[in-house]
Image 1 (cartoon, one colour):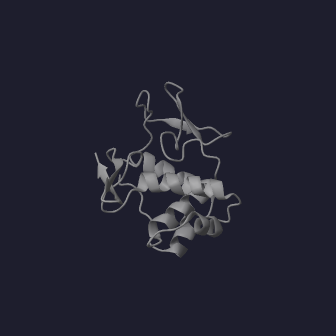
Image 2 (cartoon, one colour; image 1 turned 120 degrees about the vertical axis):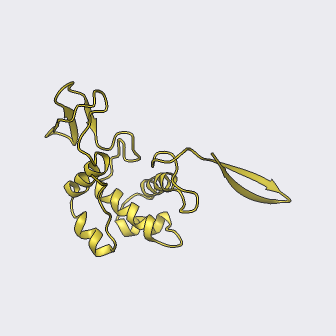
Length: 157
């Protein structure tokens, strides 16, 4: 099974991800496109706990969150805020500031928005450089070099 598609417009995005549940379902489909597989024993059956968005393996009882090991791991922000931020960062050219993002999402704290934006930038990378670690790509390092009074940034693997 292929990974789920992504909306092509803002109205389509808002319709697809209109609730926390819709965002969670999208993450489940993205993480396990061929169906659930336990990270510990590879068993293909699990049930979702009612108290939290955690899946528990029917064979070994291992519990895993759909956000474990991702940029969303242990977040306190809603998935709707994360999805909205990711959409705005990915579609806003030439980029979006933390203040603009804070206003668009209606978040109260600038520090929260700034941290969210930094995490998204780190994992999304640039189209020319490809994805960074945590988004499925190889790890890259950013180096600053000074030449003749000007600073230049280079990316290495």
